[in-house]
Length: 239
Image (cartoon, rainbow, N blue to C red; front, side, top):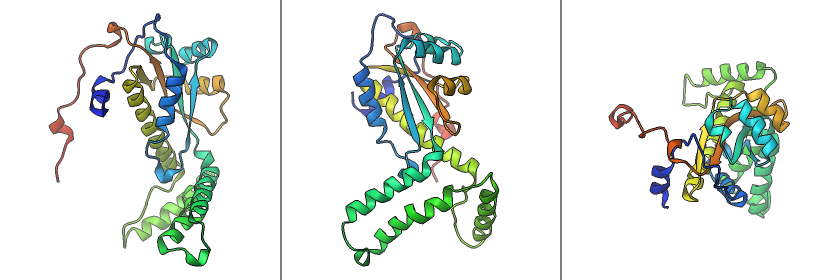
């Protein structure tokens, strides 16, 4: 399939064929493609948990209220946000930039200096917080600056959580389109007990469940009717 065909083919499938297994290697390859999705500041504050064991599938299904999309899934992928890893991911980006510059600091261009400062100084200022106090101070400072010029305003803990979830969502959508291209089906499930899923996967405290995506090959009855979308004119505004 080309991209348009994959987009049209992808549906949220609620029931999978129990007689048709899917290849773990292909699902893994689709997750590698998901890594190519856009990510805010390229921090990639997410992790993918590819669930294939029967016992763990049953636990995750129960945490998803045993909805048909979960109960009949052949495999699942849990997309997890890891905002707490911002220091590690910032350093990884910084080391990548430094490695590819391969020249003395005195020879860096203005753009290269800005890029190095972005990960060594701007990211720590943006992501660092202490029980919300520093975030409130940053918000107040940026609000005042915003009276005089455009400024980035999403600097509180709650804002950065949203940023991490958006990046994970982009990765999840890329994964589902890659699965469609491979001839496999998926269903993103937000209806779940996130605490039980975290316990089942042994995730750390700061990890958050973005979504659970079930995987398999659709049965005809797994598609609940024709696709409905709000008329394009109601969501599209040309300015």
